[in-house]
Length: 252
Image (cartoon, rainbow, N blue to C red):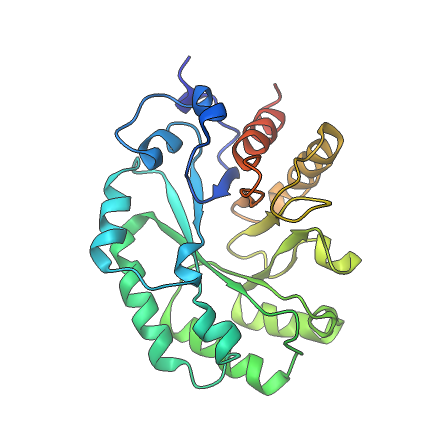
């Protein structure tokens, strides 16, 4: 059976932050014309992190979209110029430019990821203005990864619900609530596992992935889909961990 057919159930989608395949994990994938094409023979989703650091031309997104099957979906990370430099203030034009460019992914654009800086304290007016603007400009699923404790107070949940924003479940978590998915489940649940104990480098053991698979199964009925993105790419472990998680979700 090809790798493309050995996927977890459609509601529980596993992928990686990026698609550069380490040589030691090439055996996990069928043949393809590029790393992305090979990656897409096994995984149904990928997170585009490079948009956080620099803009891409629309034709780049169009090329990526043409490299994957019709059912494949990308999430795109909002630029740091919006989240970290401007800290959500006065970013209407930048948001429009970003959304216009990622539209090159067409129907394969699965959603938008907003990662906030650890120092960004929740301010009701700023947050409501920003996420309201996001919602007026796109109907796509949106997930937010806040990293300051103030974003995990019960009062913030009304903001997530009002604008249909999912709150990311992250590992390692800066506080217990950050390990659990929150916010709106209207569109999706979104896990981002970055590697633990060493962020971006550490491989996950079987017990951690089994616990994650159980958590995703437990919440499968609460949302149309659940995504888990493995971001421990610096040590080359994301692909292997994602494949192991995928197998657990598929009951293998």
